Each structure stands twice: as structure tokens, then as C-alpha cells.
Length: 342
Image 1 (cartoon, rainbow, N blue to C red):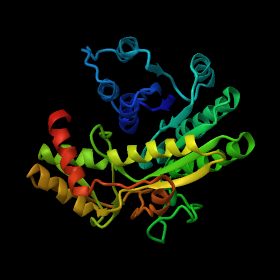
Image 2: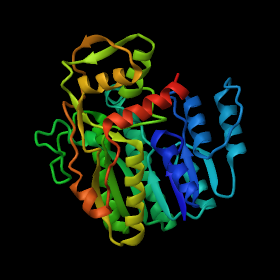
Image 3: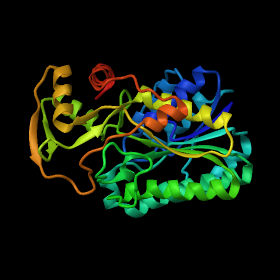
Image 4: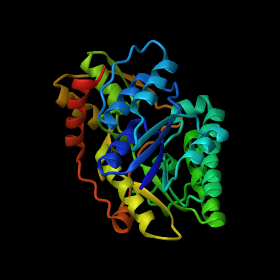
């Protein structure tokens, strides 16, 4: 099968590329290497995902990415340095390749930055996604997996969060853009019969995690005996999901799309454990064998109090069963960080 992945050099995307290639599939990776975080990390992700080793000077982003594209292209893997806001650029890629399924992971991420840059989030997360659906329509591609987010639930009063719950009160522009893609996705499903699954990811963590995310950031600061920002009283909580479980959920969603017709589904992918901020920090401390120096700060605008995924639908519909408990996941992450982190 030929899979097109947007954001295939990112955290989740690079793991997905790795699994699909190992299973004998062909992958087209579209990534913009956005400056949200250091492009060097995405180059390393890309190389790990395709099991290649190359030396880079890391002095010129454009030259480094062009070298990466040239050195990694093969019969089964193609990398494109492409912004999803540019429909004409995307169209050239779609013209070159037969695509069976699109897995759309590319987005501007982060709740707090979206409050500062709401129009950028609208451009990438909404317009960019619509560009892909327009190309699905033009090139007769009718299988589409979209990365949504647990952020759409806002401060949901009911727990655990079910796909049947109202998500009409997002509390950040990022969350609003993710809900918007779910709604617009239904339009394209209805009008153009694009089979579609929206996956609401719940706080994904693990090797290759983005450096701006809490687990990575806290691990780095604690390991360096530096102060960590500690928002609130430590009672805020997240349903953390290990990367291997998320990839399993994506692969099972792809399989469901490939074996069913007239599909439009929204599915939670969570880890099955709700961990407080205090618990998260203490678990990292245990694995590093170091104590943290906490700087108490007020809660941030846009941050939700708690997330908790009801994964009943994921279990019954696609056979999703997360297997990595939080303590084991943090142990694996810290081991990776000590070998590869910075």
C-alpha cells in the first residue's frame, strides 16, 4: 500500500513511518520542518525512522534538508519539504504518486502558543487540512485518518471523556481548530464519500517526544538540576498515552478504513491512566534518581484541569488495547533521553 503521511518527520509521524516501512509499505512523507522547534530534531527523527545514518554540518537549514531529501529517497520512501498551506505545491506531489491512504498528522501544536498566534493556527490547521481534502476529491483518494486532540473537550465536567460528549466549549484556539477539522471533515465525507477517522490523541509521550512538551522538558531540567515550572498545586492531571500504543491505534484505524466503506468516526486514543502533575514529576525523579527544584506558578490560560479518555469505542470498533503503563513508559523515555536527549 502507498501511504501519504503529513508531519512524518515529527514525533508521532516518524514512529508511524518506521512501522509502515518495516511492514513493507511505501511512504510519502510531507513535512514543512517548521521552526516551532529545532529542525535538527526532525532530521534525526527522519533518519531513525528509515534506519539511515548521515553526517550533517547543521549550519544551514535549507541545505541540510535538501541533503536529507536527496540521501533518503528510495523506491519505498519519498520525503517532501512542503507546507500544507501551499495547495499548488501539494498538487505536484499528488500528481507524482498514487496514494491509497492519507494519515494527516501535520499541525501547529500547543495550547499556549495558539493563544499568541491564533491566525497562524487557523492557516495551518484548518486551511492546510482543507487543502488535503480538496486534493482527495480531485485525485479520488477516499481513505483519510486525521489527528485530532483531547483538547477539544475543554474543561469537560464529565469524566471519562466520551466521543458522545459535547465539545462546543473549547478554551484555546488550538482546540478550536481541531474541533473545526472534525466538523469540516464530516462535510467532505458527506459530499465526496471520503471515509474518515478522526483520532483524539490524549497526551502522547515517549522517545522522540517534542522538547517543548512537559515530560521531555521536566526530564531535561531535573537531570540538569535546574528549576522546573510547576503550574498550580500539582493536581492538574492528564491521560498519558505511550507512543507505541498511539501507533497501534493509528495502524488499527488504517486497517478499519481499508476494510470498511462509508466510514466517518471520531475515536479517543488514551492510555487508560490519569496521572497528576505531582505524580508525573515524582515518577521522573524516581527514574533519574534526582529531586526536582519546583518554581510554583499560576495555572496558564487555555490549560485544562484534567483529561481522561473513555476508550470503550476504540476497544470495540478497532480493537485498541493500550499496554504500556505510565511508570514503564517513563522508564523507557528516561532511558532514551539519557542516550539521545540534550
